[in-house]
Image (tube, rainbow, N blue to C red; front, side, top):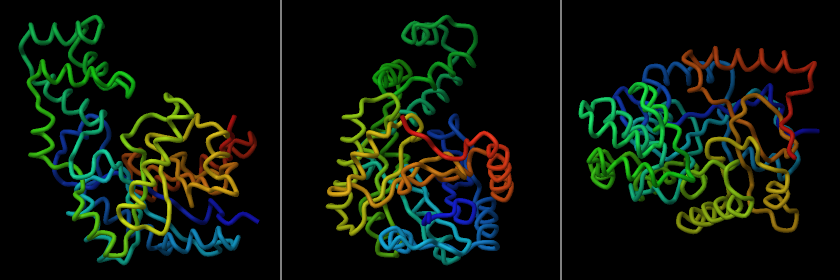
Length: 322
């Protein structure tokens, strides 16, 4: 019998919550406001009870199914609003959560390449210098059609060519070190210790957030194990949790076979983002990306249940691995 009934245990996840415009996120996805986030939580609490991650891990260790309707909340990227906004709200409502961190970004040591792209996109939109615009278009090696099209090209720069973002930053006279110092987008060491002390959980989100379907199996394993090891040792954790950066779509069965070896298991649990869906590797749990929908959480869950029903005839409700 499966430990998790995916129709009864929900795994909603977010990145951040803010009433303030965050330029490093502005061009990537819509951020939930504080009011919207509180409304989402009230919905989950109305129909489910919050599940402690220790209970979840224990259910796997004992092979004991979770019977009651419940939910496990999580947040990716380790952004500073976790400490300033999210944790106080969760404490007030009595909800546990997992915060997935990239060790390379803790204490604002570096900035995720997609966040760099959003900052650059904003500055590019504001630029009226034709010489500068031409130089950036040439660097991107694309034809200039409009600012909007060029912004799309900036935002599609990927992990393997992320050095281009630093080249564009020089042209736009953006200093990411100064941005990190001024904006402080990430959690600090002290804040993370405080969050753990308050009873919340942390997990790894890779070292520096690559797309797993764009890197080798060897690099996937390295990014995963090193990030989990780093956090476990530094924060003296007695559990090992991991969420895939971007998505686990396209990650092979060989990865999971290596990570979940019976005699040398590297993780207690891992998490994808494919919504309400099973996985052929039971310890890899699919989460519901609430931010993907510009609607309340109640509608996000309803949409996912409809998808589940529609996919039943085609046998598409389980993640397959090649």
